Image 1: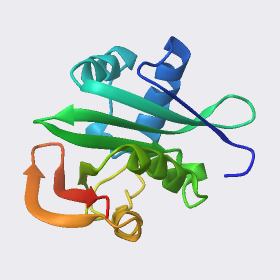
Image 2: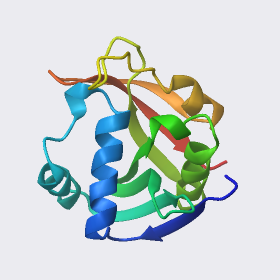
Image 3: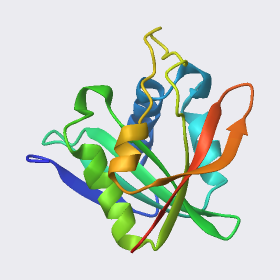
Image 4: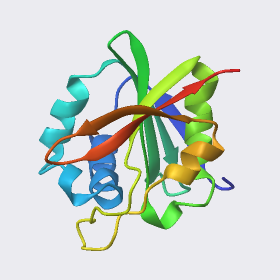
Length: 157
């Protein structure tokens, strides 16, 4: 992650929120996109005990984001890396930040390549990324009109 730095806090500035909104819509399948920044802000407002970590480049552009939060008495996460910065160590750095601060993390992972991005290209599952970090795939699935994902978990050894 040479030339990059991490910034963490319990809230995002307006500019950071705008950049995370763009990242979200660029990196996640179209079925999960937010119509506007207010929709993302409403989603984030529902998360309890949230902590953000932003990966910033030399121009102070957000190129990655991870948030940890409490849901049903457990710690969960959401992570996004800009498509042009994937496979560069940014995602691993963000996840290491989260894993250093938590004993257990849960998330939802799309484990297939059947979804499309906003630009029509195929969404590529991050399955190998999470397995490499030591996450386990659980049997529980989340199936809605927007998503078909599997629950993943990580525990500190």
